[in-house]
Length: 127
Image (cartoon, rainbow, N blue to C red; front, side):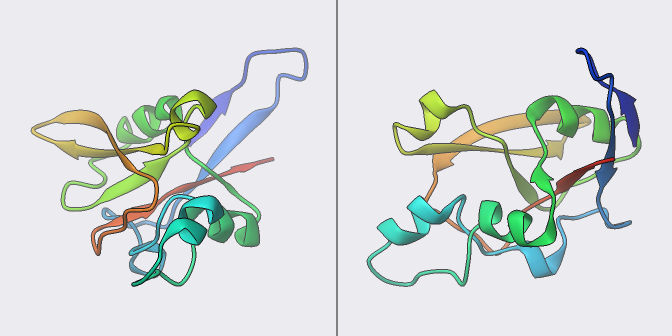
């Protein structure tokens, strides 16, 4: 997905997601960020979505990016993906995720420390 960006630099972004209808398996069962990972007392996942994205050189999709992605096909009809969370929500311990059900994009909230086998993330690479 290539989309023109607003602002002075008029950068384009390219959505970097494998040709995978569902959130990629290697990116699932992770909490939102390092703070959430550190807060877990037991049953910690291996890493977090933010940390994994940083290692890959990408960033999590925003809600807007996620909705744009869904214009290209039906993604996450059986899984869900963490998306960028506004700081005011994150400060309260929450994080946002999205999925596609019933021909509709749904955006939800959960504790950032939660993780599920069917929740991963999708990334954005700015070029």
